[in-house]
Amino acid sequence: MQTLENSGHDALMVVISRPETELAPFETDGCSGGLSDAWKRAAGRFPEFAESHQSTPPWEDCCVTHDRAYHNAAAAPDAASSFDARLMADQTLQACVIATGEARADIVAETYDVTPENVTEAYDTIASAMFFAVRLGGMPCSGLPWRWGYGYPRCTVLTGAFD
Image (cartoon, rainbow, N blue to C red; front, top):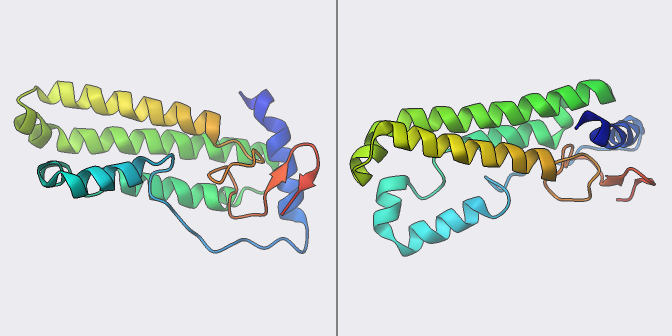
């Protein structure tokens, strides 16, 4: 994975090092990929869903923390540190979602008449899916709005910055 990503981290560091580069103010959409938006729509349409599961994903704070790291590339000073920081941010997101499941296991198990182990297994699956999604879709200089370093001007591995 690092070999695939290295050119993106190198290009991002070039953009960051330019004197004219400014970091945009922090913004978050909660959990990217439409997850928070879909959850909010479901909660608005089905009050019993919101009552059991809140009006935002229970792990949304995990996503916002993850977005903070992604926004400024975790203030990494070089491409190798940037790769390591991104991996750490993604692993932290995964661990946070798992911890959220563990904290909610008893109440969700009671609501759905399943075992707490079933709930933690479901959260583990969600956390793994989120981890793989951000590893694949969050590479630097990908042009995607949720990319690593999204607070900096967009860049491409071929031509440098394009914003």
